[in-house]
Image 1 (cartoon, rainbow, N blue to C red):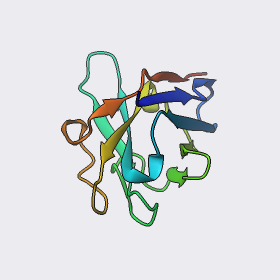
Image 2 (image 1 turned 135 degrees about the vertical axis):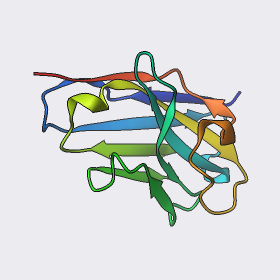
Image 3 (image 1 turned 135 degrees about the horizontal axis):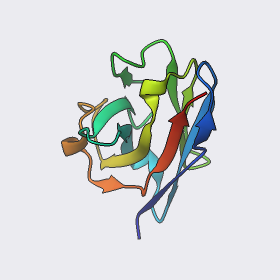
Image 4 (image 1 turned 90 degrees about the vertical axis):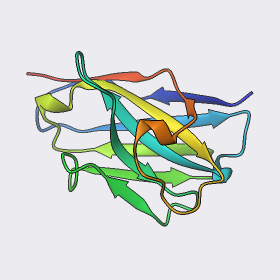
Length: 126
């Protein structure tokens, strides 16, 4: 059974860093493009960053460009999101999701991804 599990969330001060992990089980991750998404209270879920199956292609939302970096290790079946220079507006539940047999980087929108993890809370506050 395909399963994605996020980890690495927590409470961090503004300007701090966190690294989120998305571990896959029940399937071989390199068949899937992966996206990171987030949802803040009262807001719609939005695309943060997406990565192609090989890792050669990446996209970022405008609000996180230059601060966040997505990467993947297909041997470890894990995708990462390194988040630096965190701001209070980055506070949200962060989800990873998978899209099977995608060519290149799919449009980084929730509707384009099929399988979702349960999410991990990130809170940026002093």
